[in-house]
Length: 371
Image (cartoon, rainbow, N blue to C red; front, side, top):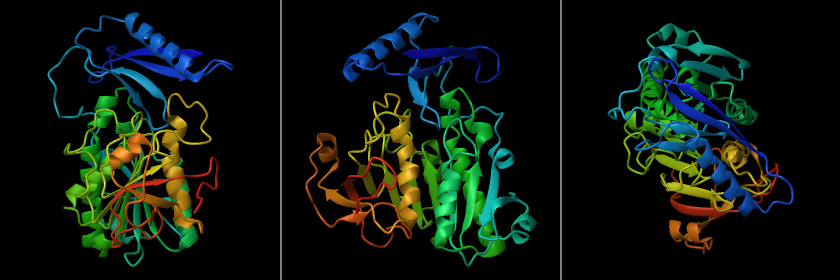
């Protein structure tokens, strides 16, 4: 059945104001999926109708970092739109940068902006590759993507793994407020990169920034702030709601020397538009085998960081076919158009001429790669 919990929260004052609904779906057996989807949509409309008047209000179904859908009125009082985020989250003060290395694989060291001693006194080693990971909405540094990607890199060798915990801004029932933080979060990551370069001699060509959902756009924003000199930006199922190609804080092909997107729930929780130089659509990019009905899309959405973590260490690559264009992905009829390529992996595809639209199939459970 469909369950909903609706709450009123003012996104500026904390007082009741913005209505949002936490929707949970359980599909009864023997009910055809399309019929159940229609019922669910009808009930969603009912949830809205039972609230306050909805004229000229912008209701959005948006995902949190776990893929759970929330029904959000992003502007309940028809206030003038502004690009200025709510002031309660100050990225330079509130983001926690946790450094993990093989010398401290599970116990982090905290790197602080404007504190060179926190870098020089840490295990950061500029001779080792550096990888940033950035979580999405309604999550923090404990999100599963961080340890899974971190541990995969440590299986290969010495890396500086820096997790970007912006939970103070991301854990917010108002999606649009969190969405507007991706630019400031990216700029703050860029500031830390500048300090790693000036203090420890880090090399931008030895840095990847890996982001998931909203974090994917934050990764792109960090790359923009670095003027595209970062080696690789890896965007894992970049968030779709309220994003479009060409927006100043959305992932773009120029954000790094190589920009790769991995689309696993395109058109629902993730964006469908190709945003990178190379854009991979596993199993067509919309739904994923082994996820069942997955009406909310959370299972498919989470497959992007799962696929990427596996790609780092697997001896069986995620081999993908290059399609003629994105239209073939939408039509479900990819025909080979150029050399195949591997999705994800260590090192990335930078310098290999990998660009365009790619299709591949995966297994329905780990190990996912089929070669």
